[in-house]
Length: 146
Image (cartoon, rainbow, N blue to C red; front, side, top):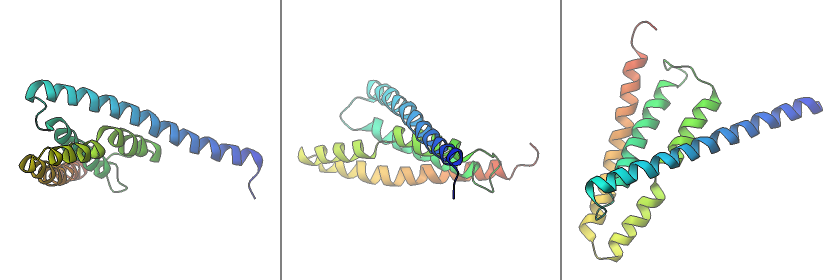
């Protein structure tokens, strides 16, 4: 049976994890807003390039960080740090719900080719992004020395 101070300590750890994820989510959301604005200014808003680029880079980041910090990885971080980055930052940064709405709007507007391009591009390039992130971190994990 847990003593009251042990129960409080467990509650504190859980609350710290929620706060870490929330802070990471806020940072990821700010990053998404910033990158989306940059891409929209550079390429326009006819096609959802910002969402596509965000999802690709987010996939790379989660593949890279997840592999680099896995138990066999080169970088040892706490479970809280992994959750902060992978659930918080990446979850706030990537935009699957935005992708879905933008694709639906393209379809509603009869823009079938751009809608299909967005779906195929997102799936293919995000899988490539997560794969490149993972193999990049694997290469780092296998490097000799500190």
